[in-house]
Length: 127
Image 1 (tube, rainbow, N blue to C red):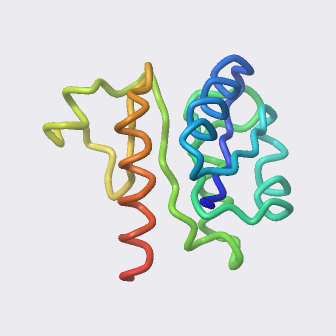
Image 2 (cartoon, rainbow, N blue to C red; image 1 turned 30 degrees about the vertical axis):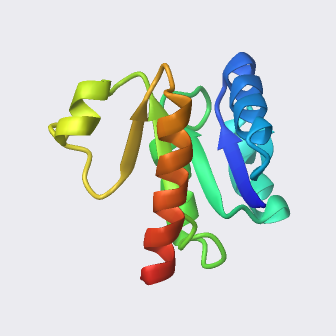
């Protein structure tokens, strides 16, 4: 069972992510809607992968990602950004200048999300 922590300020989006992933039978999903609690939620849950919205009140996704990358217990957990700031075309063509991070556009393609999670975990194991 793959443990996924989903962080997004939109409760409806979190519920959809949880329902869609858990319906596959291969995921245990914890959600967090308050980005200021993201670090403590991750430490409590011990995720295999983290899904993170970029645009959030209080602490934005980039700041949360920086917290994870400096935390010795979380720095190697694969991080997938979910955002309306990048299009499906940009992720497929690689034209989004996001650096060495994984971005998936909203609205979410559920099959692509599952594949991306699995690929992120495979890549993390090889490193």
